[in-house]
Length: 185
Image (tube, rainbow, N blue to C red):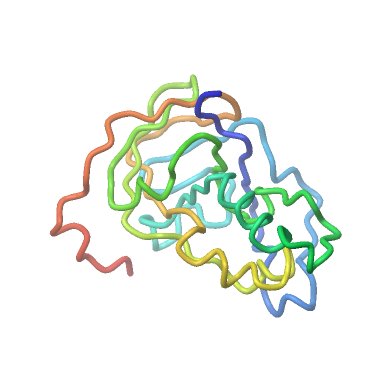
């Protein structure tokens, strides 16, 4: 099996706000499109982080394998029966969920994704941190377990479109050391 995008999450509203016990903010729209438009230095058109003051974190990418690892780690010994098993990687609310790609290896690199709509370059300067909501969305302990496994945050460097399905990753180059020291705010 090759590398693929298995899900896209594009949400115009912030659904995980406040305390997890209060539940997610409802939204009636489709947050899982088959494709999404990307704008350079702005993010995913229609997403809540599009055009914000943090372009270096405008798009998040996660490997589905990390959520599968989480499920094995938490439920593997059978101590915690899981009502929402198998875990759905899209519940982590990362914009692009992949399979067959070592997403964490792309941290501190510039790389190109092409899902058949043309290549788009991205630059990843920071890891994505899990939030406390992961304990409610997946299972108790998920927040801690996902540290250093929750994907990467990226800035798109080109306009284009990504879609669910096969994807190629090319032109992976390390980000120059002086760019890693820049603050993201």
